[in-house]
Length: 237
Image (cartoon, rainbow, N blue to C red; front, side, top):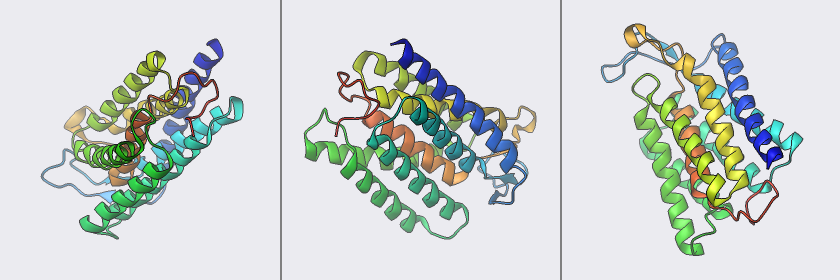
């Protein structure tokens, strides 16, 4: 139990530290920029490189945990699909796709993910449908939340932290590690996403970060009830 607790802390710290460093680096790298619009709170052009920083922090945290404790294949599947969700959002940030194409992409990513990893506490057909619904809903929900400084980042950190705590009672070692990595990445990003004066953000994560965030939180939540009898860091396959 102590080793597991240390692994959770490692995922949290690695996610937070790597994301903070990535934000600082990416603020100096050209990328998509959000211009001020009436329904957003930022008053000047804001870099949208936060999504890549979040993804980087999350993947680095999982890599660190994997190198020290090992993770199951399903964690890799989730990370791969979360990266695909990020790329879909990035295409939207760059205005390469429209709403219909974006929604079709969300469905495709959710279907692929649900075919590989899904809740084992439901019958297969129901688990597949629930996973697709949760993933598509989560990606769009966090996208809609990202219109006030720190709201989506704070909500994600709280959701991931709550999920991590819940797995202490219902099992799901891998889900807890993923949730800790998510929470750490959000905490590392939050200081750069919130500015008190004039609500001006130094950095935003755009659709790319919202899609990644929604998928990662939704995926971990849907699989949070994995068999607690397994001591390996992976979901049941």
